[in-house]
Image 1 (tube, rainbow, N blue to C red):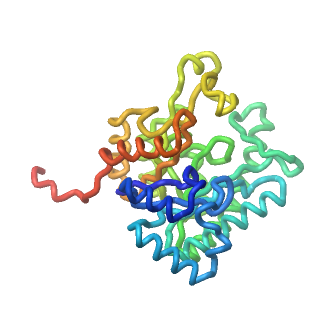
Image 2: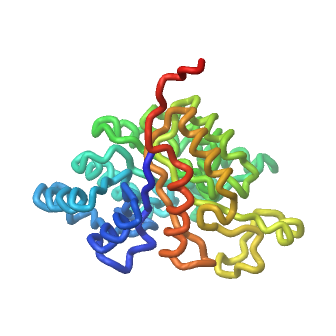
Image 3: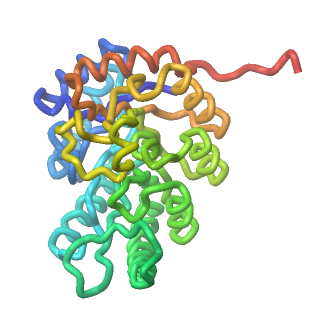
Length: 321
């Protein structure tokens, strides 16, 4: 298991500077954005796609800093009711899959996307309850669209031997493990999870149970290391479906936090151990979105904690058994 970093927090510096900085902290992998909400500051998709010379230079740079790419990230909404926005997100995904194959990167991280509630609607619609019944009808329509779309993307990913790791995210159709498992069952094994605990905590999901559930289905393709803190004084008054602006920290029910500032070291050691129980031995990619500290300090504190939590060796025979 290795520590990685999702690189958008370092977007203000060139890739080589970011690699040098992360190498000095003992990081072994990066997850750069190649489109969508993460942007593509460190890995411009068009500059590398189908260009063997640019790809070779990138490989040399990564080798210089003993770094690998754990996944290419393009988080957007390919199911958006606006055709132009959906087409843009679809292009990003398809090109990211092709680029991942060319770079010998096995995974693309993304969102499931979210359709409108019906064919004539103009805005994505996150359905969280089956009643009144028109909401259940809308959800059925959304799943029909999603299965059709992701079935085709899964086939493309299979052709390129790339896994699609969907981050379960509220305001997307797939936002919890059962939805992820359903999409995988209906579209194929190339569809799996980018397990990001931060979005699951505030929904009341127990992370180690979610890991076991998905691991039992061989559905974990990538993992984010990102924490969340629920602030009970606010949550007791208005619950956790909180539309307060992220930068209005004192009035939010929960905040994304650096690893260790929402849940302690023992909890993160449980996460690492549970990942090993389900045979995940890949990257823990740190995603920094903690508005109470700077990107560098947040990353460095997360790395410090995870270095004590991860296993760097493989288990030996249980001689005591």
